[in-house]
Image 1 (tube, rainbow, N blue to C red):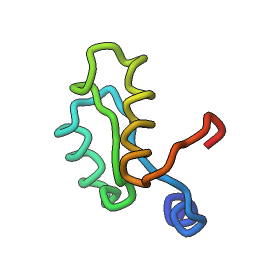
Image 2: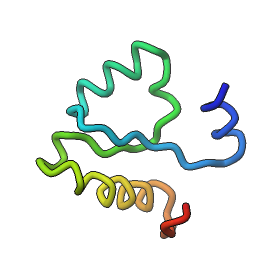
Image 3: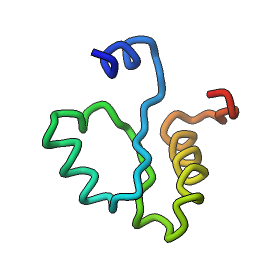
Image 4: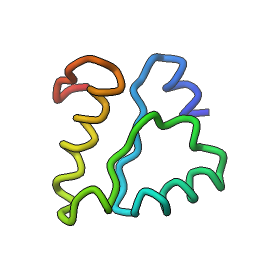
Length: 72
């Protein structure tokens, strides 16, 4: 219900996890959640997990064609 409500409200939904992309995909697919996330940043994107946030923002901007502020 939460993910449905966020999507209906126009929220940008991405997935950020230390899991490798393939593992994260299996996990969210298993629970029927894969369709909610249009982009993500994963453990195999960078060895330093602190760098995953900026990667996720960059991908969100590419998917949505806009620049996101820190509040978004």
